[in-house]
Image (cartoon, rainbow, N blue to C red):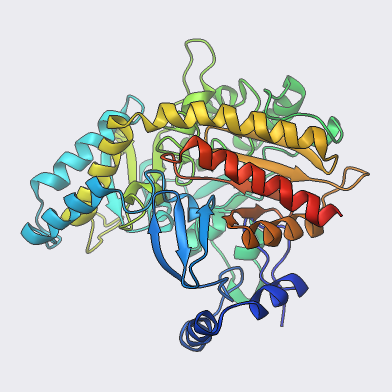
Length: 460
């Protein structure tokens, strides 16, 4: 059996620690896990399951053995927390009146949802198409780019993740979704190094929660410009404006990329599936990238994950009106492209984000999180970097020589899980945290207390 590469935006599911964890499951939990393993197709990083969950509320999920877990993972889909009463009530009403409309029809709530997306996204994005998942939405965006430009090539980043479909995996840059027997993938999908490719110039211990210097962004922006100009026929550059690792671009980087796209007739697609809807302390991560009066607005914006409020699968493409070129083709002729239940979930989620000030709350609590993370870094030399925005933040773990320390990251993960904190390890060595934006500050501090205890245990 070929093991999944360790450098992935996904967790480790093999090794001695996982075996020890599995052996500690209760008999009832173990029974469910065995049934799960006998019923579902297996795939890297999703199986075997950690445990079975029987309920969820707010910032917590509850194991079938009664263990409460602060969920700082959530697949970045639980911005408004689990089981938000306003969303539960709205979906119940919608299900009792109009749960579905066939493809050839629309409904008032479907239109209202599209109008709300146009209202909250950057100016100039005026057309919407709904899908049931982010990977599908990426595929739609790629088809629109091809139809609008008459080109088929794309440019994207190594180590990026845009979904698991053939098109999404082709423009993505994670080995886990591109290697093995899955290929061949789409042709014309060019790649450049990731946002953090020049970070090693600064050595271990450099704090990247502060803005990157020009040294870090200028070479990559120049490389992108070179590729776009020499190729001359790239339909779209697709990117995460802030990677969910997390990783931020240098100030002015995206302005330079936007200009290169404009100069070469290349569309700019921003994938905000994990980073949009308040996760980073702004409604969209790309809003952080404005320099002076110069915003960075993509031609196509892709949303998903948290758009369904942690209950209903909802994703969407929001594009410039000039890209409404598909009247004679079918970009995403989905059964659920105007589903009223999905629309209600998305509309209500946005109303909750706005009405409860959760975007602003994310920014405020994000500062608390960075302060606690820096305090941990001062105590433990193995934390080489603390970075993030809003309630998407991470601790990068390193060995004394500054190289990645995946063994320590895995050890901290399981030590924290035993104490009731769930989070994600990305690229093998970054502890990545994405709690609900509704989380109480006391629970945020509790999570860092658990982390501190976990470091003490594992390093001892």
